[in-house]
Length: 348
Image (cartoon, rainbow, N blue to C red):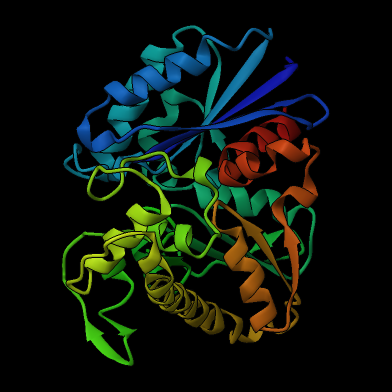
């Protein structure tokens, strides 16, 4: 049976990302909603119901990828995958849907028990597999709110050394740092401030969203969850939170330029961390022909910097898609959801 519309769902521990494409592969919409699963499944239920109520095209097919099994409401990953699939079965009821299972492709819910390890945190595989159909000898770097995926490929074949989070962390293909939710204290332990190196507080006073708001690189539509202190998200608020990391209070907007220097240092440190992992991957003998980086995620602006830093060509994830200019940022942030929808379209 052919479907007129393909819906991709990327269920994360902090966000739900959804994308819809038509039978020609054009992106109809892409959306991201905050779903803090550490508070329970209610936020996911509400978000999915909100989006689902807007889907009127018939017939449609749904494909789901996930990282939400990592949420600490679940005892372990296996439990998380099974609980989430049980939730999905109740949500979709009689509607057809697939689960994305990495190298095993698309599976039905009744095949779950044989593919739990394949389903867990496989969204990176979907994005890389889709991009690899369009390009030879490249590295996809998807920088999101919390993590960075670095996946090399050539001639349609992924060349990842790891598959699980454990293996990918070990092989520099998963870097647990992102442009929004990552605490500043997880990026640096010192800052250069007022002419000298300054130790910082080991407290989650400030996140990378504050840093990139101060460097004017944050797209506000990607920062959906509360700030570290639950306060507002003005530049002054971000500067106040970042200054607290070195034990200072700022008085007003006149202090922002001084704190911005700290933000630029933290941003540079995060870029160097990601670049260190990228260099280790690029040093592999089988990747000597790599000539470009493909950027995806809310942090694609960092991938542009990485490409320039390593004398590589930059290609945007949206280059492989038809979508409106105003939707590009949402499409980038929902790259995995777009990719599983495209993969389903191509095999249907």
